[in-house]
Length: 236
Ligand SMILES: N[C@@H](CCC(=O)N[C@@H](CS)C(=O)NCC(=O)O)C(=O)O
Image (cartoon, rainbow, N blue to C red; front, side, top):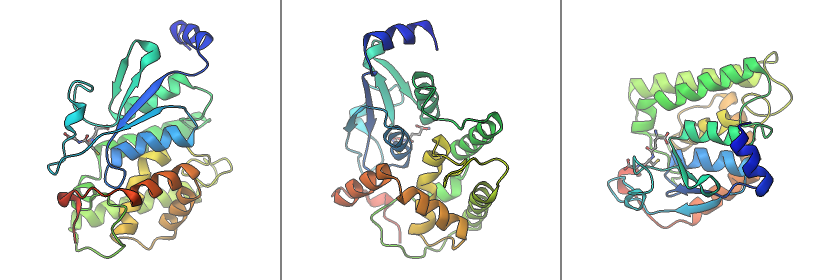
């Protein structure tokens, strides 16, 4: 651990973190960072800002250089701002190397990082055509061939992770114990359910693992209570 972090941790038992997010029903990137922190029991202050109909979060102007969420601010590091969800995960791992942001074994860590990078840069058809919308009653949606290809790739990932015995220690999650890779794939799994895009048992197994997490239950319940409607994310 860098000396500055050791010194800070000696002075305060916990870093003073604020996580900026937007609507829990719709914001898949907010979900990833929030779920990772809550499931790993990393203390933080949540600030949920409004999203406009055109998908912007005006309150983030001046807080994050991209004006996007999630954005993590570490007041214990002079207001250090960390934007981009992958960078947030890496920073949390630096702050708490013992909490399992990444899997314990080097091969699993490599796979987890590859899957997270694939999530971050890929699945554009599925993400574009099928917005995360936790309140939408599950019902099928006519989707493009590109979405079908994304679904097949997602199924292959869930299948290989959840049925592989050599790379998994005990646990229900993609790399055994919950880690960043589960947080990154959670919104994608909800889309498969919401739009009835897959009946693959590995998808159901991943959703069951997710639903067993108190952190997921907390996020989901809050999403159900939200009243805001983003018309662009309501697709039938
Ligand atoms: N690459 C970013 C994506 C973040 C992102 O697109 N967040 C959306 C909410 S889910 C957002 O803030 N949109 C506001 C905007 O585009 O102005 C990350 O990994 O954090």
